Amino acid sequence: MPTKSITHILIHDSFRVGITIKGIDGILEAVGGVLLWFKVNTLNSWLQALCQHELARDKHDFIFSHLSIASQKLASGSPMFVSLYLLSHGLVKALLVVCLWLNKLWAYPLTIGVFAAFVVYQIYRFTYTHSVALVILTLFDLLLIFLTWKEYQDQKLLHAKKKEE
Image (cartoon, rainbow, N blue to C red; front, side):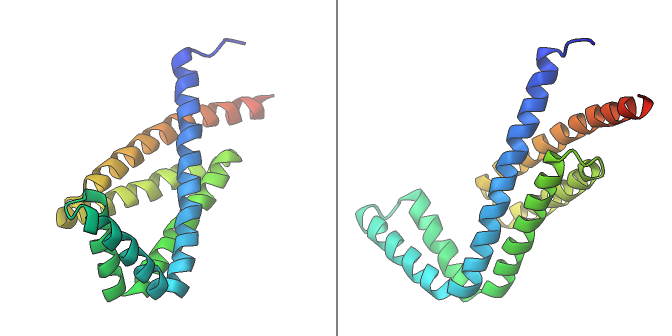
């Protein structure tokens, strides 16, 4: 049996780490969606108090000024939409990651399609927000799409070899 190259091992391990991060992110999004559904006013009050304390010390603090603005938009907008978005987005990611960890062959192309849809939406949102975080998230998703495609190629070969035996 031929040994795997260091590049192949690096790609495989990067794929596993990447989907694990996505899975954890998905679980946190789903939990955040549930909390947001029930506690939007409490969460907004808590974030505003935290931000005001920090902004009183440095009114130009990048992170807390953006967090304060986001919190105000969330409270004035539709928390139901944001909550459902986070919950569904998080559950989809977490379920796909579980299926990938279980090496379900059908999950690889589905994951590529779902992450590609996320990328399209993130690019669309970027046209409005110009958020650096969205650019980083989109690049991470594009990397995961590539790694998922490479892993899918390997898994198809493994499945074909198992059928021949």
